[in-house]
Length: 292
Image 1 (tube, rainbow, N blue to C red):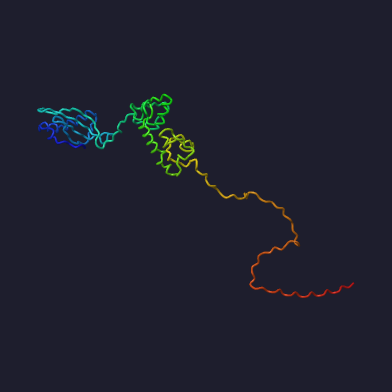
Image 2: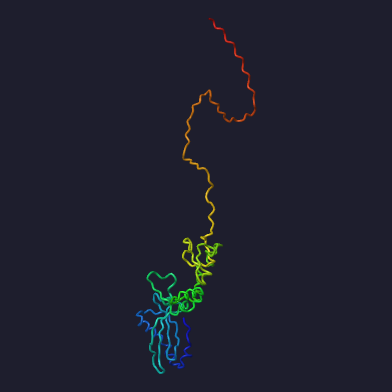
């Protein structure tokens, strides 16, 4: 609820002030007539705009307008017998949900928004550009334009180059990016690094490695894992062994062995508790003679 102004401070005529402050019912009826809805929210108070006008406020009890307020301006002249309705308007309160502030379209366009067929004009008096017949501040560029005898209609000013350098340096391909901090190697020592000409070439170049920042302007202090001096990875995998295929079986011919030539199979015998000598065999008795 907005802060209310003391009616006595703005309305020196006490009778007129009392008339304007007392026009609550008239203000409420005006809201019902204006909105076509008989539901009007809580009365919030009155404030004087000048000695002859006051604004009554009511909470807007309407779906979709949570936090909004009805503001009804009533007016009267000294000596009048009643106040009249000057205006009925719906206004946002302190807690009202509002749409974002409108931004001109040229300020809403962000890098990467342009698509094929879109046109985006350069702002008038762009400080990044200077006429081609003036010095750009880049000695190498100015010398080349003078030798050829003509230059472009506009060239990048010193301010424009500084702005671009700051943007590139602090961007995704600068030394402060997460990629650059994850490696010790830097682009200025890489074979894929193509330096820019002119003053910007002291800090920036273009990456020519399709596996990295291919085609992007990178800072000389930027780095990545695809540096041209990145060593080959160590041998990985298991040590080399002779192949063994347990899916094949070796077939051998079985040779029959007679019982006489067969070597006895020695089985592991359990150890005897005590070794005993064999008993001597009894002598064989002589065979009886056979009669012829």
